[in-house]
Image 1 (tube, rainbow, N blue to C red):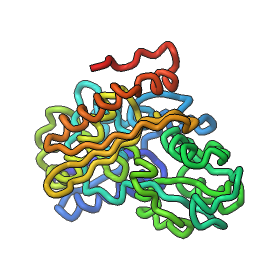
Image 2: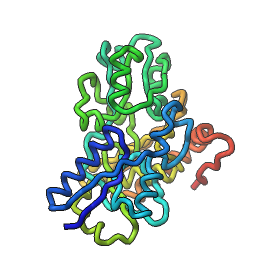
Image 3: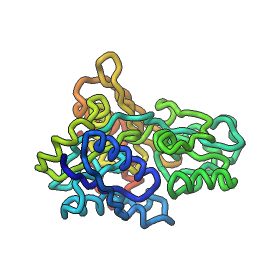
Image 4: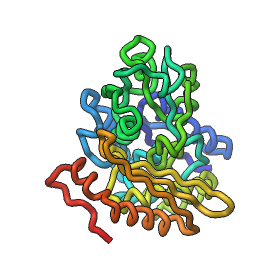
Length: 311
């Protein structure tokens, strides 16, 4: 069988993901190596990601290694992968998705509603901040960077009354001891692609494509394609206040999406059903743009940014 080299970030979670894919490949007889690659997002640790604003900050260096032939495939958290891949690459598989929702973690408090006035909540996500502030404007949001272990340790040491993280990463690393509440998509709409892994290869590498085809989960692919189509329609990346959650219900896709002001003062929600993932994502995006999403996103991107055109 072919020898395959996986490119991965070096965080504990990224390596769990790379080793998970590696184990699946080894079960099929492949020899597998993992090359750790430090990305721009890994190097910038003292600034909130929303203020950096670089698309591909967690993928660019890995794609460079892929292009140079140093690795044969890249394993990404799909939510970190830009909706438009650079020329020369393709998304060959989206893996079976684990719980895509966000969770509330706290040592002392049992739920968001139980937090005292002015409680200190850690998150560097504008999407999470906006949806939290919409229901609890009294909460004080503080930046929270670092890997999962670091974030949980800061909670345990009392730097925060609570933090919000993705269920998927905590579950994969077995760090669920302080999870008090799983947040429904109607309250805290997740990031597009959250909970799924994206497997990227060089465009035209047919042999590797065939070897990796078994990793693709059609239901996860359909749902995340829908979410990413919505994100692309709105011109957003993973660090903007846009939420998207799609799931198959009764043979149809249902997409729930949110665009919100970071201070929570305005939250636009839209939900539609459809059969075609891309068409549904674009339709929901169009609806949000008609309702004023451009104004919100212009404020986030800055006056110099060019918002996506109105339909």
